[in-house]
Image (cartoon, rainbow, N blue to C red; front, side, top):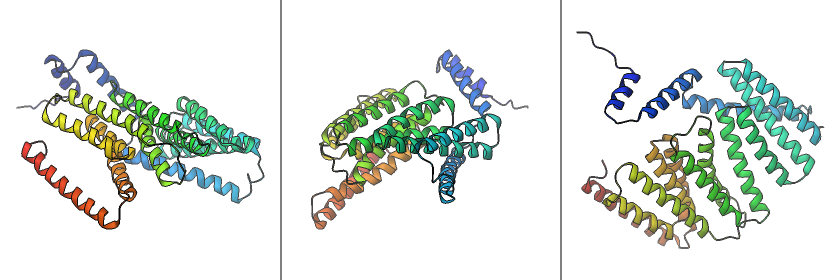
Length: 346
């Protein structure tokens, strides 16, 4: 007896015959897999290490040039010129090379050029806002010209942090809530759409990291923010509730006991927690809904960080804080037992 091997095309055809997928969805899946195979996508860990290595190499290269005093005498125009040269050489190297190490060298040159260009803008303008604007425009341009995922992610995160820093330094604190809103809407639109394209995936993760990073930046540094937290709390609570409703609808869980408990818990957290915890829960809901390990990892890391921040922000003595921790642990144990009893956890 000869066993036939089922191909992915056969599996998709059987699903279509049983009306489990639409015909146009089969075509989309095949197109995505063909494009992915043609690109020869590396494992995520290798791409991450490749990107980190290139960024480190770029800044070490700039430090070397400064120590050797080859660019120490440059003024703004010199930094701009060499930034453009490095960008062009990096792009030409990317177009003419296929190996992983050559692509990494290309990325290092582009990152160095990107940084030198912004340094030149800062030297000429002697102000932060022109640098923020130049970083935004350059990141948008290189998104189309230099399609490297790690560069797209890093430049997008850098732009977000520059805008947050400028708004905080210039006392435009109310607009920080607008930054949170824009990032949250972009995150929800990109991840809850039909499918995130490969070109927009780095931007999607940058918005996720930037949303949490915005609150980390405001929390970690003494920026003397003169605006209440409740607008961001309200916005993030609305985004969390919307995500729970959409996820429950897609999983056919809308209207059941788990759904209403999740809604009540989200509303309760909106009244007692800080915006960072809501961001972490939003990333966790999206990560489980989309079955995305990266989003889940971001959510878990953010939740651990902001729980520590929440603990230290409590206006209590250490004995009271210890009792709060013990009580919280007891509540979580009871909740775990309840979930097991209802069959909602394994």
